[in-house]
Length: 140
View: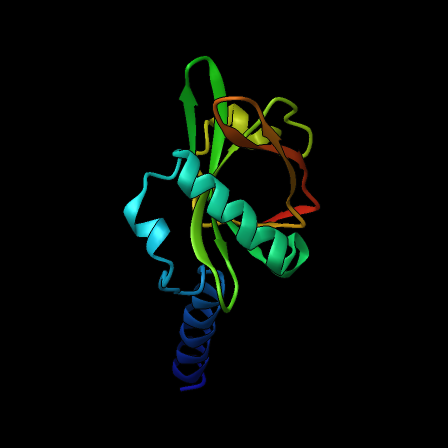
């Protein structure tokens, strides 16, 4: 008889643990993020403005995918807090701290929190890009 309550308790704990790892739902309220493609200058400039206003440390980042484009490698991330719900494209030149993502091309990391993610922005005459700098840890 004791095994049935233990089984129920274990199932409940597994469900709660699985739920706690998911990215919180958010809904974008910024029309620029709806109107423009995420690698457009309009989208990137607005995202940069929002990140500067809120502060990188006040946001959470969740891995979405690995992409290769025009000979460059990128990670796509969900960027969130109470007032921001967007997706960002971050160019990666130095894979320090996220070698596993590069090795697997992102497989197995979708939905992982990228805690302590830092990046810079580089602007040239044609576009602004976010460039990966460092990561404290991956919470999977």
